[in-house]
Image (cartoon, rainbow, N blue to C red):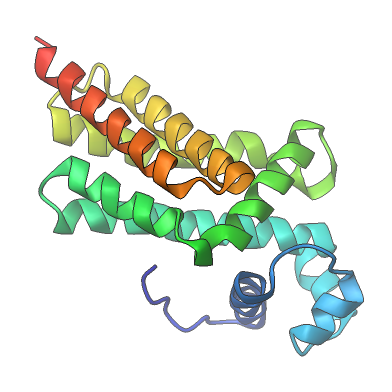
Length: 194
């Protein structure tokens, strides 16, 4: 991923530290007090800034997702071939170093689907936040603004499904091949459009 600017306020600094800590240590087994201590703060400050442990974890997922969206746009700017930009992002998302954040994302996504606490709005937000930038990327890459929203939703679903499969099976070779096959199918469909 790309370097992130120095956070401005105490909440932003705490969030940045939590993103890095969870990337290093994983997201499972934390209590509010243990996580606050590992972050060098008190549980009261976590509650003040995020409302709860779950609130902090959701904020971490939202921050990581925002970074990924920014990275996707940056890759589109630096890779003239849309398929190569997609491959570059896939390599970053499927890197073993990203696994703790991906696990946390799916854990909180499932909690949100059940309407639990701070994660309740995460599933919808995690789709809607991606649709506009991906739609713009697909429209530009294909010249087909009419189908770009559908392409964006399909691309998001494919990548998330492959990431979930990777976490479940660890079969990196098969999933790289599946992602490549998706890109080949997309290229074929795109070429056949009027």
